[in-house]
Length: 347
Ligand code: SF4
Image 1 (cartoon, rainbow, N blue to C red):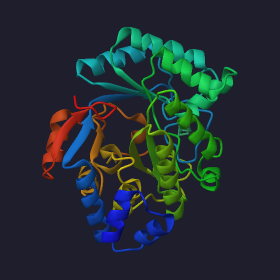
Image 2 (tube, rainbow, N blue to C red):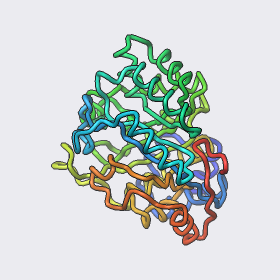
Image 3 (cartoon, rainbow, N blue to C red):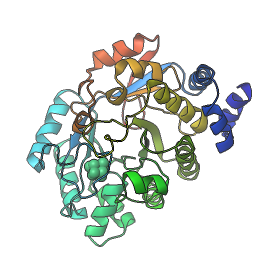
Image 4 (spheres, rainbow, N blue to C red):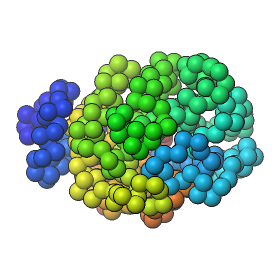
């Protein structure tokens, strides 16, 4: 494991190394990941005060793991979105995370008008859309994805979400989200965003039909992309939630041990290159998120004010954690809470 520690810091972990690690004793694995976390980012645990706004639950993509699509049947108006942002500003949120389903009417013009409206009314970081929305908006507007991204940036988009990555292996995508952008399309849109100065998060949605080899290949794609562009701010591992979707009849979701291994392996593969690994309390629950913070993670995500997507999929850990709760969860594991913005600057 000493060798793995050094090689992780050098950025030298191979697929074969990672596959061997999956079969090694989990507690040894957690120890190495935790040591790496301490060496790379120290004892601070960051979090962001934010609000999720999901524009609509109508969606033509129809992913098998999605519990959100058509769960309520709504499409927020611009006025309703602005009202939600006002509530977030009143609570001193620094970030709005805006996305949702994909419909043919959601063109580049639609998103640009919405973004302009938000930015004209509020001084707040807009973390919005993902490669799948960019792809379909560009297609509907008969534009290239790069031109669509340039238009969104000009309208005021600050950062793009790295959602819609799921597992970046096309044979897995064919089973869980056959209508979504392919691996190559996702990576290309992310690289275009980074090239024109739009940073993004990166994500992995694991626990459906993929193997550990698929998860590792996904992480290696993210590491290679980061080497080329330096545009990822963090990795958000998202465990599959097994309620109210087409896949849940056949699948049960992961064990807590599997979740912890996922965070540890991500830390070991990504090392210093993507230094921020999030423990998503809304997916894991706050107690398991505390453990993930001891297995390689260093960020507790957002305080949120609502997360219709996770709630529809059976997440039962609430929709909002105020600053004080974030502080308590972090200090209970003897770490140091730090409020950050979307770009990991201290607030
Ligand atoms: S996961 Fe996103 S893209 Fe897929 S069906 Fe649900 S809302 Fe649509």
